[in-house]
Image (cartoon, rainbow, N blue to C red; front, top):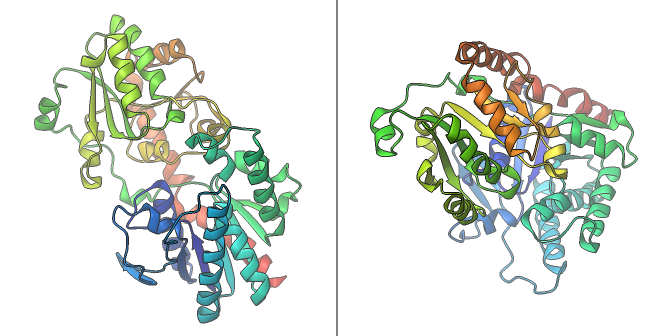
Length: 406
């Protein structure tokens, strides 16, 4: 079977999106399927330096067909997106005519789904559409629109049209599946391909590097931490809000925030206002190869996501990666976390948006060190048995076969 994947972006860019993509492709190839890969014009926009508009590229042994980014952006709302879709459609038509795939597999956003549907109809190729998050909700998170606005409603209508027109729909979790079915799709036309981890790529957490620990001023500290991008929905402001209470009970506590993003300056300003700036270490972004050294400094990982449509519906990868490394974690009880974390068994959950509840849950966990080995082992067992990529990707088989038979 020959499957042409239509992607928003890919490696060499690093994101949860690209890591999931590579995992899916590796497992599909293990099943004996031939996979081909085309990225949208947005891939070029994500590069720090403009690419040379090469139409094909090899990256780490993977071959990608590229769609050049438009040379100029449109000032009128909506026209820029329309131009991106037209450019992707033309490039996809070229590539599909060259490769003659059995199946077009478009991955969100809908800016990829609609061009794939048009090309699929033109060439008589079945099209499946995979939703990792809804474009309209991502726009709310980025601040480019508000929930219920005209733009939001129009984008949601586009998304619903793509879902209904696709031969089959895939998504990453039950929260998104429920929303898709509520838009009028039969349940049997929607399959969950859960987020997972490549268990062989993760070893249980190592010993803290004493040199790095000293350099960051963490000697003798109990370290709470977060590693990732500082978006508003991650709720890092809640962790900082809880810190004064935590310090009253456990003055040896420190917070290690590894990464950066849109909330970087706001979080630093909040720490100054609360008088806890000297108890928080902001490392900035670190090289990917160095990330595990920073993880090894952290006693408890915090995922205090705020409750909003995005976090209630979408499951993140980071808690799974933490469990694969046998790490302790505390997370808010948003829907995306409840699908992954069993409270008191593989991690601890607290009431989303409640700084007092976060502080109480952390203090309880810190006072029960005898439970830590059991929590770590249960988290690792969960991903080994239920959340590995081979088991996840196996769900494509039946759906692909059904589409091709029809």
